[in-house]
Length: 395
Image 1 (cartoon, rainbow, N blue to C red):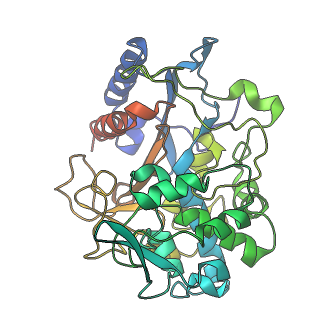
Image 2 (cartoon, one colour):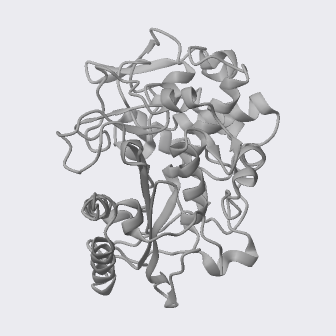
């Protein structure tokens, strides 16, 4: 039996309701029984203690193997906060400035062009300014994701196989340097491969692979023993899987292969993890940089990461929700209202393509994690889970 990541307690001792959390479990269990999701793991912690940690349904819908609290999930873009924290560790060591141009360290990205359309034809114009490291961390670099549209640049990304796992991090950056930006740097929030580039920067600054750096500086010290860029052969019996076909569309569901060590260690979306491992990372953030007596970041670095860095810059409304801005690796809540989900000003969160999600609410000393592998249903369950957790408050 895996030890819990935090000391368990009764929900009422930390201002939560046992009945409310039981209701949360009943709702998730009902969704599993209706075959909306194969299974889930849910974790809620407040004031440094564990109030709720339950698993539901099947880890593998084909074999019928049950979900367990220590099941391993593809967390996709929940990789980004971890890599962003790793970068801030090196900022604190004086390795770079947030205002530094990326081309100072990666010459392939020094003289970028921006795609524009003139008379229906693609034209390239010089970038008005350099991409900075701050741009990468807040997604204002002008880079994009190939799956975020079907414009000409997106098609160029696809043709270049920018997503390939059969490339090194350095080779991906070299390919990105040959492709145009979709926006001028700093002009618009565009969800992108920016954090992949941050992963490559970490390799350049540290002299080791991204996986080695994360293992040395974050995973091993925090006790995140099941987090990495692939699942070892002896642990494959714990890997959570999706339905073979989407329950809504009937289309086949194919998640990234994490059964072999990849050549490409994606800083933007390559990690696997467990709820217990990720809880250790989030508790460190909620503790303003410390966990189990060790310090990982300064309080001021975390305050900087979880502040809004966009101001008047706008972006994709399907990801940058109303009432939210974006910091350095996280979406950040700016208003008590406006958003369609409950929360507090200063709350920060992100999720992953296959359905994993977390948020941290410093005002309430709370964080919550839900892990599922259901790409098509992810937006609904993220909102439902947040509603249910906040509905379980008792103080």
